[in-house]
Amino acid sequence: MESVSESIKKLMQNRNFTPEYQKLIEQVYADQDVQSFLETHRNELTDTSIQRGEAKLYEFVNEKSKIARNEKTFAPGYQPTLVLNNNLIDISYLPTQELLAKQAQTALKHRVRSISMPKLINEASFDHFDMDNASRNQALMLANQFVADYHQQPDKFHPGLYLYGSFGVGKSYLLGAIANELAKYNVASTLIHFPSFAVEMKNAIGDNNAGSKIESIKKSPILMLDDIGADAMSAWIRDDVLGVILEYRMQAELPTFFSSNFSMVDFENEHLAVNQRGDVEPLKAKRIMERVRFLAREVTMTGENRRPKA
Image (tube, rainbow, N blue to C red; front, side, top):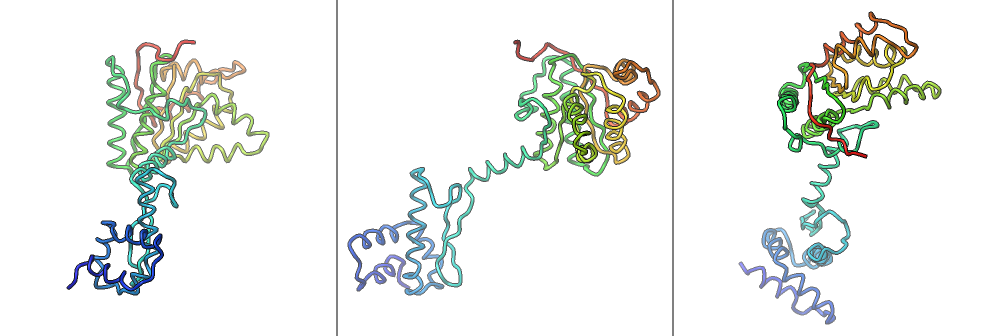
């Protein structure tokens, strides 16, 4: 059986090429990937089918050369590969490793839905979470444990965390890190800055779409309510927004996280029990806190204020 080079030489004999085409076709057949492809499929290709495929072979070599020179290609982000299609030479364009990595990163970000949250949570990670005191170490350990437990048993209820601490100790960052870690396992999370969400809900009343907003939030696989208790809460926000969301999530046993400057006790007595009008309603506050305590475990975080100084 003759070699591929001998077959190519024979194929090119007695054909009237222009000098320009002769040079191009010689470069095509000299390509190692082309020769390897022809060798692999030598029993399936005839001289005629190879000649008919020369345009495809040229396209393959040309596009491959552009990629090597970092030039713009026919299909940016995709690399050409020779294939056999009904005994004819054809090209398939496959995504490059760089494109696959970029797509994977984009998919990760799409699994984390952020509403009025700081941009820093987009890049938050366990690896960059400072462990400079015992409370932060414990918080990170519990966050890691939640991710591991949820990944291993996603159909089992796993309580979230109620991160309590003063301003700037990294509560929001840790929530973002948990969400980003869960995204690696195809788990979607919704992070909400609750005071901003409360304002949005009030505005939604006039648009008549408050109900649809609550529906989309309460059913999130993982919900994180950030900075809860930062602003005075109206009775409507407390009972018909927060209460409805937490009631659904408790009944459905959906993991829920919170961050607050209030401990659970103070959140109930100093915030939930007193509405914006100054009315004291301890029973309604107790009802909300029953759901919070079912959904999350309180974790205290201490440390210096890490927020940039103005």
